[in-house]
Picture (cartoon, rainbow, N blue to C red):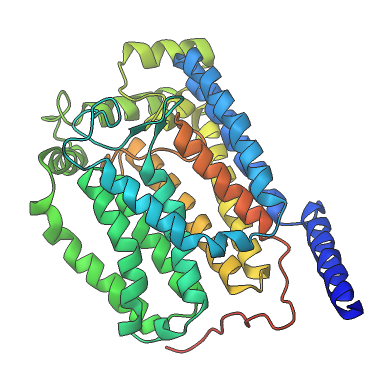
Length: 396
């Protein structure tokens, strides 16, 4: 009995020590939190440049998102490992639901030919945003308990776990979000100790196969690739059709100059240039128009700080599951930021992907802050007695 009491007291003491360690200002988790907050505030201002009503709504989602992050950050994150598979399977069901024919229009209403949203009453729930975190959790849960990923055949199952939701998201269609799963998975299996030669073979295969996927793209996706190639060649044949959005975005980025045009003039420029999705996919163009190259650089710096802080958390976390989740979240959000800004400035095809923390969208913002809370929860994890050792590196 005394031993049981001592063990319980020791567990409570360990939890208090862990929480105290997380709350120290020297904790790398604060880099992640402060970067997320900075990006979110920039997003509110950028959205408010042309859509003040949406900015107020986004502010409400931000409050809920921060509250959600606090809830996830304070206790131990062990629940995430226990619930990884239920979350993954629930998300799978939601991804199937938006694609099922015969689902009432009041529940799943297509927009521009895409079936991505479920009407939840207070907001439009986007299962693909939840799927990003669900994939990270379930892959981390699987990798931490095995070393089969150190063999080439052993990589098949984690790749299948990522491929299933990515395929369903691609069918919606949402090519941009689907493409995020590959780089995220690669980062996680590398962090888990996968062999370099296996990773090199997979990356080389993907590079060689990617051009062969062009015939299987939808017409509007082919058009965006064609528009980017034409733009690089100086051909403006798509400027008034499929290339209009990209052309307007680049014009507004250039109009911002070094220091930007200010709120009123930037709002006028965005309005008169008729930039589509200026509060959503193309919000980076609004940031650059309003605050110039300096504003764009700040977004990149804060995004790199978020991912860098997440990798610091992963490096210091000795629990395999925590290390993998922090790595996956860092890779996912950095890749998403790079793709979004790249398509806005005309170096990547437009894929309809949001800018994390900045673009308008309740599900997206809540998912980003949930990831932030999880990374913060992992930021003080140290190895405990009888806990599985962390991954070993090395090997070709």
